Image (cartoon, rainbow, N blue to C red; front, side, top):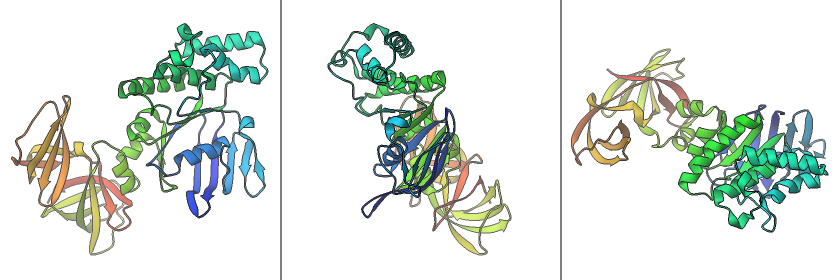
Length: 371
């Protein structure tokens, strides 16, 4: 399988910039999710790699082949890029059986009949749909149709499999099951997957790397846990994670190369950074990002009140009022608290993020302790 390289790729539609100066490398056998809100450019990026859209500027390489270069006038057609594309609506032929749908692409590629039979049988077995071989798409459930669409896409052995929100038409339970199947399929096929989604949970659970975009600009391109634990900026931190990260406005003064004194909740705290802290002398406006799991209720030095509790069985989301701030904490197990009950808490762990108050970029990762 090849690596895919995008260099200074830009796509404009008249005056609208859909993708701006995108640089990224999709490594061999990666499962990359293109993640972001609607209109961020993720589907346009996928379509440009596949050849369904032509970039305005830049260069795209798949393996050793340059498939697009604006300066050189190179633009290889989608059919010659050796990729498979799985669409959101599956696009199965309604008048063909499951077997005929999977075999259709191989027939167009002039495969021999016995080779087609062997390959289709392999796909039916891999996707566990052997019993549906003679059925038509209208006789299948959504999940079964999706498996047929995947089998048809994988049958010609494409170098790369592209998927544009393929699970969005499924119900919640089936979507969860198909995530498991897709992750297993990626391991079994040893292929490179590029997957578009706006669902951050889907991106986190499936991907080896997440490419998070906003208004056509790449915000962060890292493994899922890096994106979650060490977000590049406030947008990334806010978009990834459910419940979302808490953001508290604070004032920080540099105490040493790797520490600062911060004022928040009407109290002083020490922030100990994991790396050198780039703060100016004097007071600095910062935003302290705290994941809900880092707010531990009880036996703490910070006072608040219970705003609401949202139990879900395995865990309970607790909303807290602290002065003018509303924070979210997660308590594991089935617990409940009365409204407006006074409660104290502490901030634990070394995964607290300090963002610049103006640029909202990640300044440092560290821990917070009372002064």
